[in-house]
Length: 104
Image 1: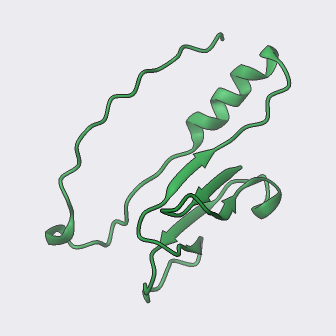
Image 2: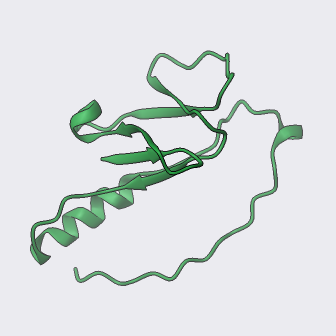
């Protein structure tokens, strides 16, 4: 399950899990006032703010569940819109986060 919260940390949507099913899918987060058209295989999620926080969560009962939970988390990806004009794209900076090794 992926919890999606707005700029004020109010949860406004969930992707996966009970909310949308356990088979995965493609979701597009669209900001306020967006009037575009999404491909048929993409589910739109309207955001009340331009900025969101995406928080994936996996239920773990004990240490034996950790490898499967890590595989699920590794399968979740985020990408920008491919149709955004190059002139409107911002240069992205890499952010390095400390990584805690999970037992395998």
